[in-house]
Length: 436
Image (cartoon, rainbow, N blue to C red; front, side):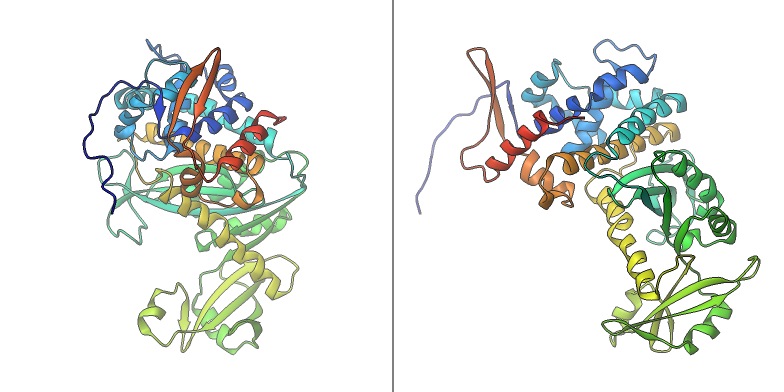
């Protein structure tokens, strides 16, 4: 084998290099959105800082989340990113202490101002390249386990870490755009049904006036007549997974089942649960249990004899197979988005012990999630529309680069042989020509 270079020296003199070369696209895209101007106009946060404006601190947090830095104390690595300092026009990035102090100082009023900017952009971009008159909301609660002394963290429903303190996070995603719509951080012992009605009302208030039809998909955490019956009165369509109660256990084995797909079958029945005002339509799916007991134990089904069952309640006027086709799309929406937030965003890395500061961080994280979602929808080819942020980083953002000045021109130089050269140039032109 060739030996390569045997002797070399090292030095530390470069000022304009980065391994986040592709992040300039996100910066240019945020400039197109006029994000900094909107933050300066609407976020009136009276915390004097010697070096940074409030809008700059918010942008720094968004960028570090997008870049893949999962913890606040690891943001020190950005201090060596000379390219981004030049692009942003700052001498240094805020250190972890500055970021934490900023989060701690934010009040609920300040957080609502940040959310207002998020909502303004969402409303502005909602119909770009995608006119629509209906929405599908995917509602999903998730658990965030904590390991410190975070305010309002309580022991509650936490299937993966039983007995651990946690937060309950309520999320709503708009299915057509796969976009975060609304989020609420609560104590770990708060049941979703207690907040479900108010949470849905807040989701509906955000809708543009052009939207005429609303449908909802949700898991069994929202299965309650106090939440479901008002949906019937308001003509909101829904499919919600049901708890299989004792009476249902006697009904579902004796139903007449029809083939659905593979070796799965479906049937439907009318049933009036206790405390409900009138009977509702229930659609049941069953599938044979795997022969391997360990594999069967991993399935989240109610089992009777050799079958696993799932039941949903619905008011949609569709055939049973279409009901399940519609409901199962939720797994490709909300559930995948939550997995993305937990794996590729720092959703599970609770940054402070203060409850309000954690709310602020959550809202900024979800703002970053939608920023990337808008970037994919408006700037990238269709093949990248449903790529994860990990793939976007790997292919387009985490690229070594050097900023040089030739004459009066600033040039960002990338490595020779970079495989996505044409795509990067195409995206750059798309951002420059974007009309918003």
